[in-house]
Length: 105
Image 1: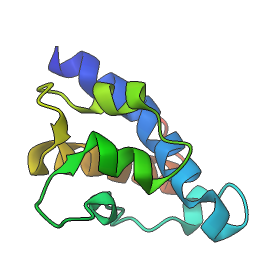
Image 2: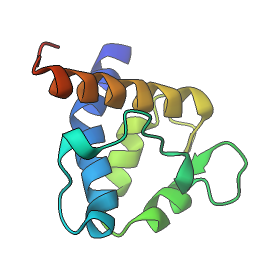
Image 3: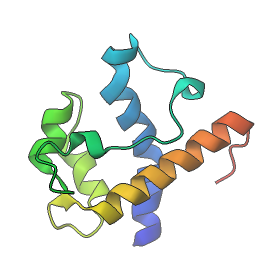
Image 4: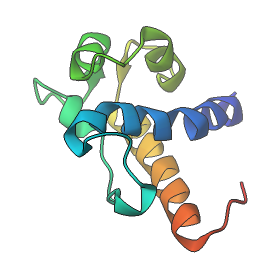
């Protein structure tokens, strides 16, 4: 189950990041220009340490409930700190692979 969730995250995080920051960067950003310390914590509007579905959907108009549900590994309705860290680790791995030209998974 964890591998399935991790696989989904591997494919969803880059598009999540690109979609959530496209306006800010004037279009889809180049991976080389993305920060290696990417964080989704900016979505946590009430600063309680967890990102609710409402916060996720309000964070960007391109966010979808289905994507949130895939990232919510324990299906408790929030992206807790552990889930956020896992998403960020996957993003960092993808960023490093792109930067080095390695695309092994």
